[in-house]
Length: 514
Ligand SMILES: Nc1ncnc2c1ncn2[C@@H]1O[C@H](COP(=O)(O)OP(=O)(O)OP(=O)(O)O)[C@@H](O)[C@H]1O
Image 1 (tube, rainbow, N blue to C red):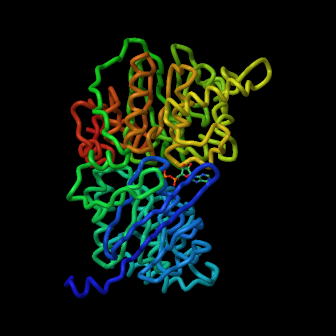
Image 2: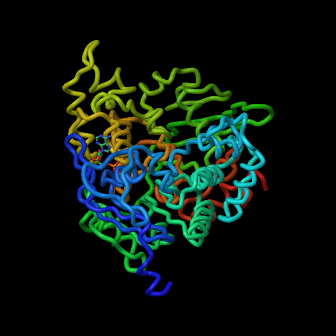
């Protein structure tokens, strides 16, 4: 692009002086960001820094108290997302919003068409989708059911859905959080193609290496305000993290094995039927010792959720589960929890928190029968509040206080609260599903420390994570789950994320299959 044309090209997005206040919190303060068209622009910052709030403002989901938004040089004011869509802004949410039992085509068209599906010109819609998919290198089959698609494909459908509505500026909220390395590479390839077509991508991410790999420009937000605008070629991941927190990061400690001979959890021949012939869990057996972290690696949808649900007694399965030599196979979920199982669930909104309740009420959720919640037949409010304050401090949950509603916390801070709660009350066995999903690098290191310390004190942990660095860095042993079977046992000190990704996708056959 020559200097002349550069001068005439208007920024895709200009945010000037954006301020947004919530009760007790200034979520955004005088934010200034310029996003050039045809670029990938990353927004990074600690949990609670104000990234999501800013993206919601840019997508018309929230109104700023102050400041202006310009899109392609023209000032805009959004009342709803439809206003943002009308000027070409689209948002791909982290939690996919697709209807499972509809086809790709139906999902893409749903909501975008003025007519109802019954009267839709399917042939024209299919032509347009195919054309969009081809132009942007987003291969998907329009006639497949969404429930049959893997995570990477679902994400492509979400992107196509946004493009179908005419978006030229795409907002992606932590797009790589659920992807394995191979899928991340595919997504980045898609983003590069979008960019080459002149589209603009704004994305939020906590994975700083990835940010450095794909972004053309990076804006750092700290405590609600823009503190730096950098080019990826000028910073390292560590410097970026330090810009986010405003101080130097501690260097992580090395670790030693704390695995003992005492078996804490023993799962034998766990089998769960699915629809038709396919088994959701197929003869799964393993042991976890006191002081051991067993990591389960797998692409989402290969039986991890079912395994957790079986161990927690949420969903029936054949086989046997023993906790500390006791057969708990027929126990209720509550009884399992009471006997010392902590559970950091996969989906913090559906299973982890009551969003309309305060932080201290969430602290006692699922722990009503135990200390500090219980005093006689009553809930001990004072002790519960005090313990919540302890968690807020120890886990650095950014909140105005323990009476704040859970829904007012940023995503990462909600996660820190859940982790703190589940690590409280000295569990003997912990199920940690994606324990650091959505938390910033500093908080991630802190949660890892908490897990390692608890492990050193004898906690047995079942770790399920899509973050392969986390699996490799924390686990004593890694088992790969593929189509409901444990197919390979791997030594974390001897495996790279790329090879692990190979086992997870079935590209490298596991020991059981060879
Ligand atoms: N609806 C709300 N009501 C009250 N406070 C809110 C609300 N939404 C966000 N906040 C507060 O605004 C601040 C910024 O939150 P935001 O979700 O934008 O952070 P974030 O940078 O996206 O964090 P994360 O990385 O954890 O997702 C936080 O202190 C949060 O508690």
